[in-house]
Length: 254
Image (cartoon, rainbow, N blue to C red; front, side, top):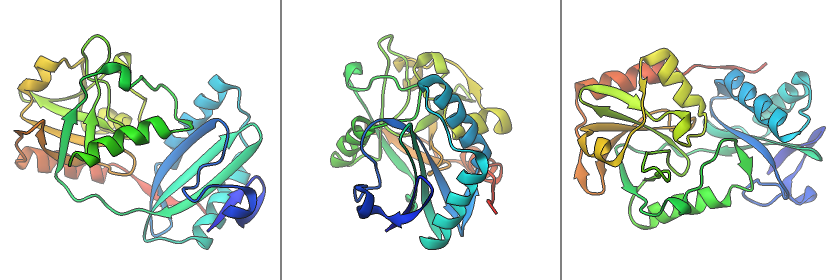
C-alpha cells in the first residue's frame, strides 16, 4: 500500500507503518470519508486539526503540501468509497487511503455500565487503540456501537461515533460539556439540520423513541434498538437522515 510520508509517496512498510496505517508514537489525526476521489467536509476536518495541533504543540504542514499529499494518495490508492486518514506528529506527516465498507443500517446499540472504561476524548489523537477496543467489544456482543456515559450519568458518545436521540418529539445530541468529542458530523447536524443540544441522562435515554448513530464515515445511520429495546424508524427519521446526507458536502481536492 502506498502512503504519503512527510514529503513523498512511499510503500507503507518501507517506513515502518503498520498494516492498519497507524504510525508509531503520538499524534493527532482526522478520518474522512471519500467517494470517487471526492472528500467530505475537508475544510471542517482541517479546522479541527488546526485546533488540535495548537493544543498539542504539533506543527502542521502547509496547506499546499497537505492538498498535494491527499491528491496523490487518492490517485495511487483509489476506492469508490474510502476512508482517508490524515496523521500529524512533530516528526511525521502521514496520509493513507483505505477501502471503506458502508455499514448496513439499522444499528444495534449497547450501553457501557462502567464509565471508567470510556474516558472522555476532547481531541482526535493516536494511539487510538482504547476506542477501537471498545468498538470491538460491542461488535463481539453482536452490537454496532457502544453508548458511553460520563461520571455524572450523562451520555457522552460512542467508541467512534456521536448520537442523536428523539426525546419528547425533539431531536437532540449531547453537549461538549458531557465529554463529547467535537465531531464534524455532530457540528453539521446542529448547524445545518436543526438538531438541539442538551445533556442526556439514562432516564432521558429511556424515553427516546428513535435515534441515529452519526460520524464522518457513517454520516447518519438509524438505530433499531438499545440494549434490546426496540426503537422506531419512521417517516420523521427518514426525513432527518435525508436532510443530513444532503447537507454533508463532498468536493474535489484538486
